[in-house]
Length: 151
Length: 223
Image (cartoon, rainbow over all chains, first blue to last red; front, top):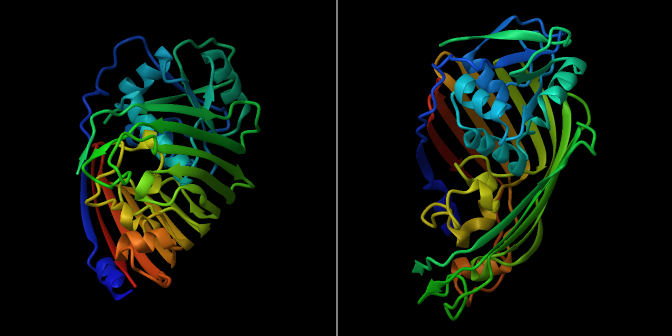
């Protein structure tokens, strides 16, 4: 037992993780991604750090304490790829890793996956506090566009 | 010890879809590998090609209300000589979201918790979350895994974000059950009696500088 205690006491890790990403969030060329929220969301704009935190399921409440529900498209969907690299500045696999860690360690929940942009708009318009993203947006969709402020 | 380059890992992931309400989540994984450790009894006594690299798991998370959530995962693992094979409850806890603001989150987990203190400790048995087939034995020593999986006890997790970046602060208190095979792996085949883990406290802090993919952390443990 003493052996184990000794081992435990002597365990002190300094870990350094370095994950290089070449994805860039600077490119604001078309096709434009629109980040959409349910009309109940008060915020009109959002910082890049904040949107990264929301989509990595780290921030789960808006600044007025309203719960955030996150909707995403599948990894193969072009809109998801563009949103991930251009808006978040991360590759889809990096997001996947974060979500997998949450789900398989029990630490948190992953976003809700939807099949199409149409379903995305429908679900975001129905769920208070919801956030999602699309490329196609019709005028009669009952969602608000939230502006992502650059770094 | 050399691990063979012959690794075939078949994996299958499944997850719940809209069949379930948004408050109930169901996910799982199935993975079967082929492994060989030459001139070593790390996996098998003979050092031959082996299928003893099976990892199955199913987990579920149910949100009772915005403050409380129950989450659990059951696994079946077979890692040859590395650890006792069989089913076990990997984690099962009640989570209480004590504080949830845009820049601060504090939660407590009561029950069987995962070890969130090391980089890969919380998902060491989940194949698609690891960077390698087997985690480096210098840190994730299988002969010592029972106490590294997590604790039956209490876990406090705080996450905050400020101008410097993202911060994770984890504190756990509890103990782990040590199997008789683990006792023998650790102390030798002639070990008799039972090895018990006293309750201990573990603490870790991680920092990710703003908008970078770097992560710095430290971990302290004490009885």
